[in-house]
Length: 158
View (cartoon, rainbow, N blue to C red):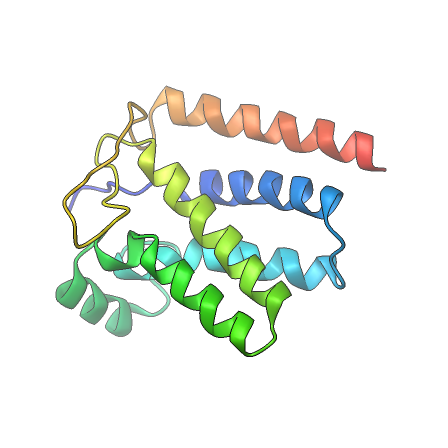
């Protein structure tokens, strides 16, 4: 099966820059836990792909999810982070809700940049996509630019 998912490292880099900007503007009680939760969530979105970074470690589970839901279906829609946000906010876990939403949405944003795109309003068939092919020089350039942005942001934070 051809890999159509943005590489895990690119998802992590984009999520990390999102975290750095979020933490810079909002009071986060535990920035380390917040960051870990965002980064885990950004990888967990691809649990519907059995060959993803996390999918490989949870192969039977991810294979079943992939078979039932398909890759970039329900789990790649805005419905899932919205549900997590509503439930966790109701349980008075606002910071966890925001971390999960940030990790989830940052993942979706990066997948939108690929030609395969994402049906963000699943089950409605409105697909949004972009030009960046997985593993291409353009994705590598994006990863380098994100790494530079993280380094610059950290220089201004410290």
